Length: 95
Image (cartoon, rainbow, N blue to C red):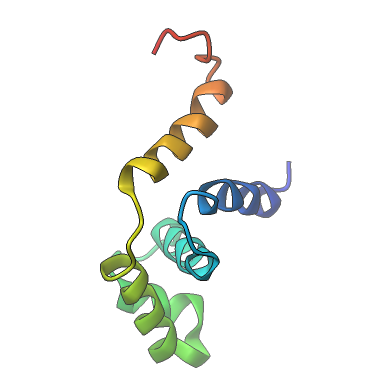
């Protein structure tokens, strides 16, 4: 399995629940940052690691995604559930 392709498929799946397409890059960048081996999981070190040549702009974009974007937590969590439950074989309604 190609991990990058699978991650991108998952991000596409979750992005469908964000409302606006301009939020897709923020979700992908933020989730990428959360998976990086960083001692601090805040947007500043994430931005510096994800896009070192444009860390200031990336920091602003990630901060905006996290703090200012209006997206539904419950819609995102439903997307996570819809992805994970079948993969765990729990789609028979026993969760």
